[in-house]
Image (cartoon, rainbow, N blue to C red; front, side, top):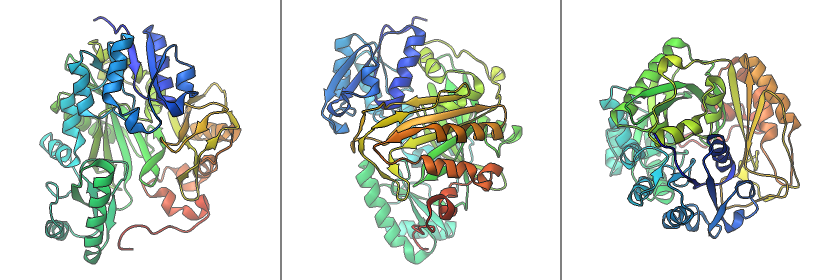
Length: 461
């Protein structure tokens, strides 16, 4: 199969830098795009060719589909890599690329649309024989429907937005008297965050783990899984640390989850890299949560333990090449931990803006740093506050954790507040060291990690 002539990277920050690296290794010319706020960003200054696409607000730049396609045509790109976020899971954009004769490095618009609505994705998972958390069969149009479904499921329950993720709108309801307020709040936040007020209910699973499976599919019909990632350490329902393999997973659980993920991907004719996310309870029962139809922020830990470059693999299969490995070739070796470095105040997780007076990162054999910033970079309020990702590689989990701790202590970032101290405290926590994780880990241990009591924000507490 012929490779692409040129790739336009329709993203910013560390993921744009990461894709540039893969293009260089494949010998494919690449170009980047940038907003007026990102003129001096690392993905711009390190790119052989960069194109201005609009002012700082994302809607006028990184989400401007027509302008991005115009730039791709004008610079001679025959493929677009969307990275993650922005337009990566936009079925309309994937379709627009196809209509313009430009390859979209990702799944087709149909697969993106099928997994884009959580109510629909849950139905498809059930039809594929993948276990799902008990919940409402579809979107809840009225409060009366929500009451009836909650009564059937039994409290506590979770209200979730049908159209999105990232914890937006999520409401834990412990008692019936709190349902009305939670229902209204969830719908309002879903409408504001996703333009769709649809919500649905799930039975609440106490202290679950968030474990996801990396899948990959090619145009020849091959679908494989590349192990799992534990993503249970989160703040505000958003991940800040990920590791592979999971401290919980054994060969039996890994195979069960992996086979379910492959079956779901195969059932929708998936192409490229995707992630099937599960909640796992204390008894090692796993339940489908959602499928992300794109490259994940945390893909480096999978690359580290499998030795497979996921971005190169994405580009290859999008160009029509078969997967470079078969399922039996996939071997998990050692352990990898990723920490996300954010410009934020760890006491309240609010973004911190300003100019990076210093930005020094470690350089060590078993440490990888994927970054999108440099000294002098201005952190603005327009985009996600992720500065960099630090990835460690150890023969054992204990070695990987120790390497990460030492690497984080070497980082020097001034000019903005960061979450580095929080990450170090998490790694040092005895329950984290034991692998006793859950999605409320930071909230449970807020006293020693954040210096404050649990916020008790769940509705009904």
